[in-house]
Image (tube, rainbow, N blue to C red):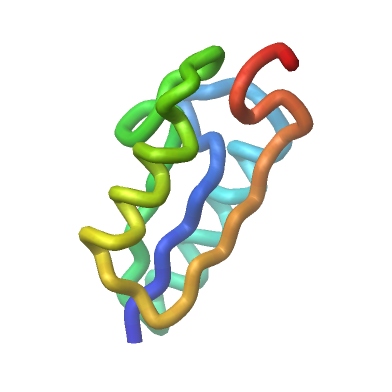
Length: 77
């Protein structure tokens, strides 16, 4: 089974990124995990962020998508 995690991820310094890293390390022992993060998929304050995430998910074709985000995931409103 494959899983895609959409989340901030280290080296981003926030609680959500650290939590996601811990979760990914544990899940990777049981399933294939891909991470779409603010380092490899989107940039904050970009109007293309949602499109980049959608494209990344469609490329991976996962069975499960887990989105863990901070309040300002896409930047300032």
